[in-house]
Image (cartoon, rainbow, N blue to C red; front, top):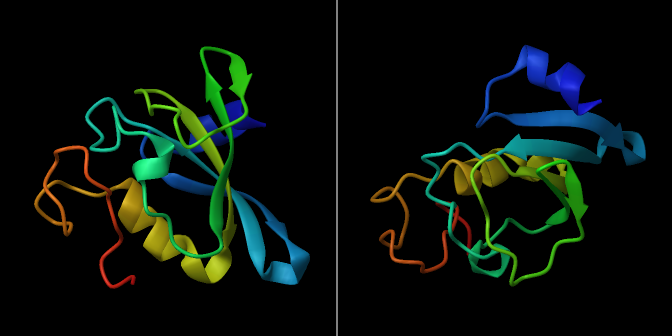
Length: 116
């Protein structure tokens, strides 16, 4: 399924793969770009919006069950379950640019603007 999606989008796009629960939640995929500010950070340091969680990482053709200590690498495919209403905030976290978040690019948590 991922190969079909990759044909239609670029790396760094948040892509809705499947809508669940009568349109309330979705499975989304995000391929981490080389220059992404989340590269080198642990999943636990990313402050994801409420109702969003990483459920799998695909790395080098291997499926990884995520833990807070997993470090994000360029090219990782992150699969998340997300409330559709939270997708824009999730996109803000995953595409965060240093200097546009509450924290500098020093390994501190990346937060979505406007989230508690």
